[in-house]
Figure (tube, rainbow, N blue to C red):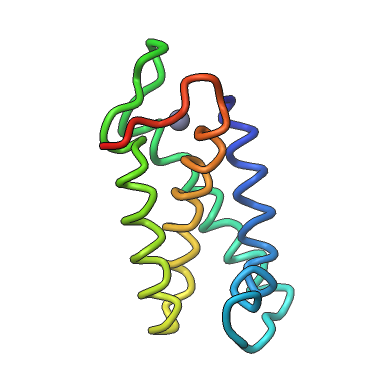
Amino acid sequence: MRRETHFLFAFLVGFFLTEIIGFFESIATFSFKERVANAIFCSFGSLLPDVIEVPEKRKHRKFFHSVTTLLIMLFFSIYFIKNNELRIASFLIGYASHLFLDFFTAFKLPLI
Ligand SMILES: [Zn+2]
């Protein structure tokens, strides 16, 4: 999947983080500035998987593109949300959003 697609998807996820988190638990709404900051952190997090595992070949997806890593990222995102570290959580959610999108491509994600 293209880098721009990951970046834009993560930006939207970060921007609407309040609504996404609010779906699971009540949290104070963010100001516009906070939304943009979360979106930026989220966008940069979404670029990281392809920096670690450069998509030169079709089979580039290893551990850092795996379902296991996706679950680890979601686990730590919840941890940081609960500790009110939303910037770190946004970054990790951005990473997870990359794997989420890659999951729906023809090559899917390896389990480990
Ligand atoms: Zn990727």
